[in-house]
Length: 222
Picture 1: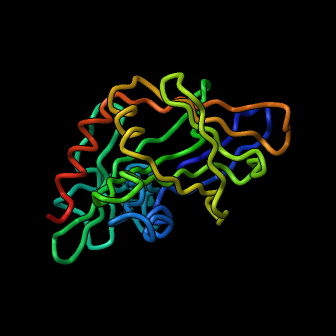
Picture 2 (picture 1 turned 180 degrees about the vertical axis):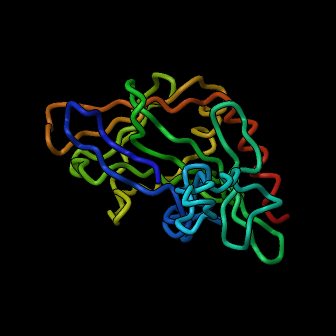
């Protein structure tokens, strides 16, 4: 489990799972949604670990889930492109749909939001879609604001909230995708419900964006 939270000054720490929730949230707009990977290395030792003379001998820590070790339905990171990951979900037929993913942190290193992005078939108004998840204690009426490389900000409403957090499902035009490709960073701004006078600005790094998008696009059905 990872923790997504607004800065401690707002007392808005929220436990959020980076798991299959994103897959369900993006299914209606994405060719295939992929949840964020879980870190098996943080798992607690088994309670029934072998003991010798009353001394627990421990159990080996499992490594991260890989394409080779993933079971059907599990998520694994296929590749990393600087600040972006190509996360895929294991399927029975081996098609393994993927998305590009980034976890956003504040200046104190707190995990605050996550973004999964996916290309869409040509000929639509939206060239790509994204699922952005933020903590439950976000002021929904303030919406979500995204600004690419200091350009004109754009406002996106929140679609709904569920146990892990509140979700905004957004679409990007060809021109906006081109901005992402040539940009250095995007700023994502949310407002904490506990203090509506404050704004939390998160940096979405665009380093590795083009390579990650190309890798995910290459896996789309022809």
